[in-house]
Image 1 (cartoon, rainbow, N blue to C red):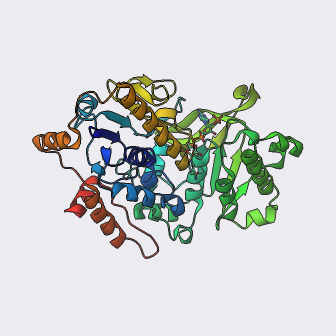
Image 2: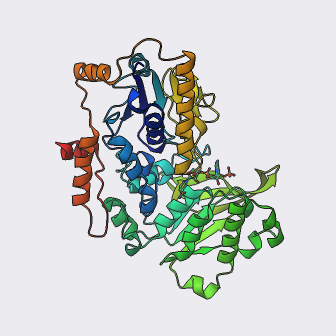
Image 3: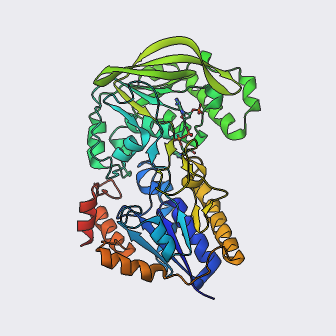
Length: 440
Ligand code: NAP
């Protein structure tokens, strides 16, 4: 049987689970190249998952096992669309799988969004996680009030990171530039703004519960904002647990709350309508909402909330690639169960949008490999012999592309481990040049 050649674009969870599935399905008959525009692998695991959630980051050990096998290789520091086009990759590989995630912030779409100290979560999370694109963000944390928009797990991550003490970052790999700024932060009020109610939050119980165990911060939930307790019974189990946690927060006595210098306030049924400020954000205009067929609808009642920093954690979009059909409304590639065009596939957030846990990407990876298998079997792909990685290496040499291999990454990783603070697993390089220097 002719060897099958697969290119995966993106080395995050969706990319590596797809490679793992390809390996399990095709064994020695497949060669998989995983491309990444950064010289370092793991995408969201490295730059999205919160730095104080190291156990989740541990999944990268599973990806490393895949990466270290003969038939899978990491091709870092290559930007698809700049260094090589999708069409060229399709010439070289039988199947090209886009596992590019959803790295762009969804737009708030209200006036004042371009004011200073207003960030999307991709940028803000990227800043404290050392993503080269956002390392220089330099948010101003000298004000009193931060407003975090959205009630999902990313909003929880951002609120928690803003609230933690230096000691609580022990064991995390938060980058030192962000740690120093967070420790010097003057923020004492963090408002989490939700356009729907306590029964519509997207926060999962384990992550929500963490807010109740912070050293310097205490969650504030108003009892009157919670629906009748009997209504919790109608919720699905995860959401019911989260609702119970909100009730526990609401029951925290005032004197206990007052012991902590930072308040994390939950504001429900409040949608942002404008950001106000003179160059830099100072306040946020919010409109009270009510639920109409499950959706938030403005009631016309408006108020203003002080805001020295705003982080919108309202979801993400995939970056379009010229020539690849894109679903503008959903913010991801237009696809049918992972198929975009013959020989071109997508997986993970690039396929289904930004939802689910890291583990959701595993069945995704296996299902795209099933689709690829079917397409090989039906003759839709795999008709002519492709050059695969040999062809790519030739083209890379002609273009003078500087590929970072997995072996190179291991050198970068060792340098990051050597540079770590005493209580941290690593100190990430935050610029691409430094990463490449560490390899040489
Ligand atoms: P999410 O769970 O979809 O939450 C987005 C939130 O933003 C929702 O509360 C949504 O409200 C709100 N929102 C959207 N547009 C808005 C607007 N224009 N104005 C005001 N609010 C708006 O997304 P996420 O927090 O970015 O998380 C993405 C995925 O990653 C999720 O599946 C999440 O569970 C996962 N994740 C997991 C972890 C973990 O397990 N530790 C950590 C981080 C992220 P509506 O509900 O009303 O639309």
